[in-house]
Amino acid sequence: MLVTICYNKKNGVIDMKVRFTEEQIIKILKEHEGGKKAVDIVREYNITEQTFYRWKSKYGGMDVSEAKRLKQLEEENRRLKEMVADLSLDNKILKDVLSKNV
Image 1: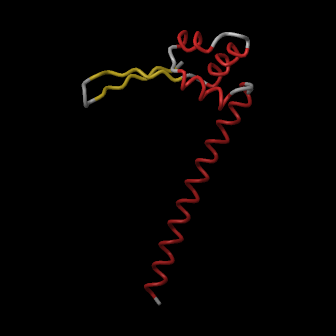
Image 2 (image 1 turned 135 degrees about the horizontal axis):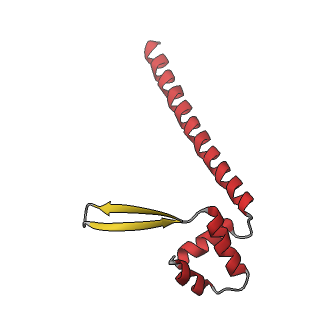
Image 3 (image 1 turned 30 degrees about the vertical axis):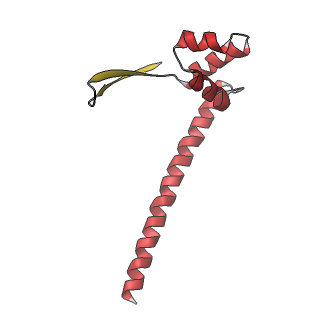
């Protein structure tokens, strides 16, 4: 579990955000699959029901290795989208330059 402490300049409040690793999320979901009620899990780990069901839809039925692979693929997809955006911008700039030179 990763805890991040943030200072909110608007209202002067210090916020603590807790981030769970994929391994921890899958462990929590396995508890639910083992028969533990969602309400009890939400209370025990201090998460919202929305977060629990979001995790369940994303990681439900996965093993830790599959979740790690999913994260790698999401990161690769992000990088590829960024490359496409950069190349599209370069292409547009070149077309604009060529149209002005004609």
